[in-house]
Length: 246
Image (cartoon, rainbow, N blue to C red; front, side):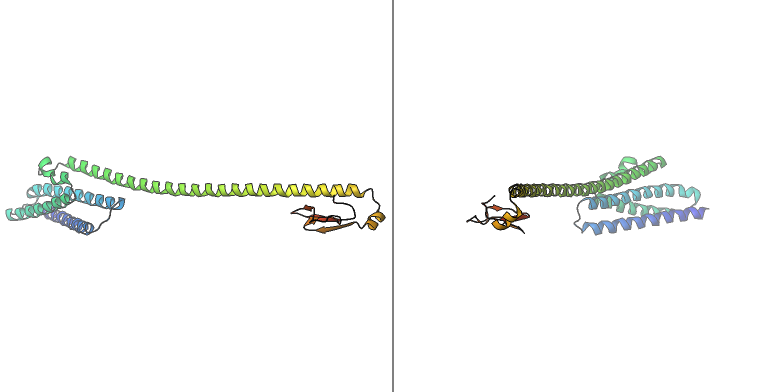
């Protein structure tokens, strides 16, 4: 059982040392990068959380080392060696915290003392969870802002399309109105011609040279010396006869 306690301390120390090396290499890597913005802020927030976790592990190691002689007697030389290892690792953690301007972490020993109570460790863990939740909330907020921007762009495109459709509809209405006016004018000419022709017999029409020819351009008669007297853009007829222009 005593051997298990000693191995437990060594295992905890090795994990803390590995975490410190990981943090140090990450800081060195990102220091040479010029990244800015939300991505860089999230990255350095993650590093700060790791440094805080490292500090909590160092506190636990100090607590275990203080209780170790009662559970697993070790020589004074071994005790001093472990204290030196722990002191060096804490100095390394403080140095990394100073690099990220974590002054509260660097001064933690002077504020809280060399040992940390279990309740304080739980409080720090809860604070760590809150920080993680805040970072997650910021990421979700950023995603929401981007999504809202895309929706706004889509709505703007839809409005522009509707405006173009309305303009096209106005043009179509104007064109349809012009066609209706032409049709009404043509109908008026035909009715007028028919009313005049009712009083003339077929034989008289043939003798006078009456002809009704469908052509796509104009209405005229033989007695007009000028250009066709009526023009139309739709289906019209050319009225040819010996009478004057209708």
